[in-house]
Amino acid sequence: MRKPRDFDAELKALEDKARDLKNRKVQQLGELVILTGADALSAEELAGALIVLAETKDAGKKEAWAKRGAAFFQGRARRTASAPDRDIGSAPARSSSAQPPSGGAGAA
Picture 1 (cartoon, one colour):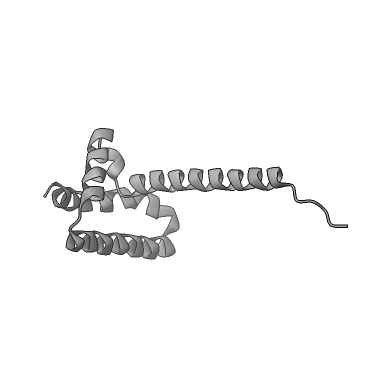
Picture 2 (cartoon, one colour):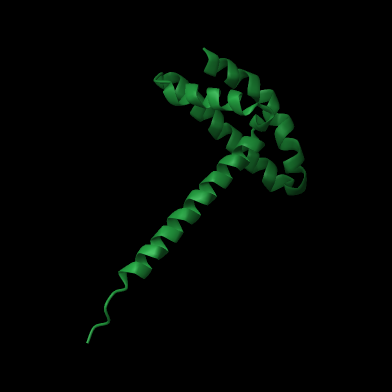
């Protein structure tokens, strides 16, 4: 005879997995804010910038932002491969110089 499925246990396992994924996403977003130097902004400034980004319909701007983000991650990957201990200290200094142009693009 076949064993009946425990739907409650399966549902709980799926809910736990979804909660873990959401927590990991939130943690990764926080790490991204810190790595880019955006943690120097106030919560209001950061929220305003993100709202502008989310509302932007200009495909050219979005493509430029995506390229810049890809370059950030590629540069970061090269730095972490060459100097993992020093990378954390150098990341905010490099990203803070990249901060004003993105703010200018978002304000436009």
